[in-house]
Amino acid sequence: MKHLLDYTAEVQQALEQGLPVVALESTIISHGMPYPENVQMAKEVEQVIRDNGAVPATIALMDGRIKIGLTDEDLELLATSKNVRKTSRRDLAYVLSSKEIGATTVATTMICAELAGIAVFVTGGIGGVHRGAETTMDISADLEELSQTNVAVICAGAKSILDIGLTLEYLETKGVPVVGYGTDAFPAFYSATSPFASNFRLDTPQEVADMLRVKWEMGLQGGAVIANPIPEESSLEESEITAIIEDALRQAEEQGVKGKDVTPFLLGKVKELTDGKSLEANIALVMNNARVGAAIAKAYAAN
Figure (spheres, rainbow, N blue to C red):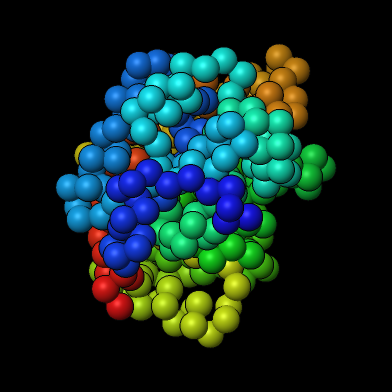
């Protein structure tokens, strides 16, 4: 499948020279924010990674190719095109064969990053087990990907709208280590804490890099969740966000919102009920993850 990969010159040179490279997803550009804010944020995240000593590789699918790193023209096309397909593992072959434009989710970014030889990936938050999954079976493909694809995912935990307890149980069953970066708690995206603990606490990029190296040298397949809490000044109160989500869930039930429509409904309500503070928090945590991800990639490349 490597013959399907197209690299920007910056990324290709970095990989050839063994320099630290950080993968970035593209769904946040196509589906996460309006234009032109989406382009601005994508460029800012890439610059944060460069400023912290690594090379960014934003990944997307275009013209039947997997783009490892996007040019300015690619980024504009992705950010402004209608009908960009949100691409998970199940969709990947179809999007490439049909030559649609595809934005990569956590799962697909992991697949493409591993193909490209990139071990560290920065995102906002991972998907997980949805509330009510015991009847709906609504479980993100991100979790299955973490069990089988050798990429470390730097994130601010799992989105608070999910069932975090069941998400952690699923990851435990699949043997995926969940590391609290500088924290004992498992962060819940908008808030730095949750009622749940991470499996381990590691406090430095070198400690994370050492764990990843040992894991993969032992042949233990699968990724790792490096849960990096949102900066304290941007964090929403755990009790506040919990109350807002419960209110949004109640409204969803009253309005008959079901299935795949629940998540966008909840995220929209969270934004509305926090007076937009959730969007500011989202941007702050992604930038923070980029800084930490670059530091971990540097330590891993130096080993």
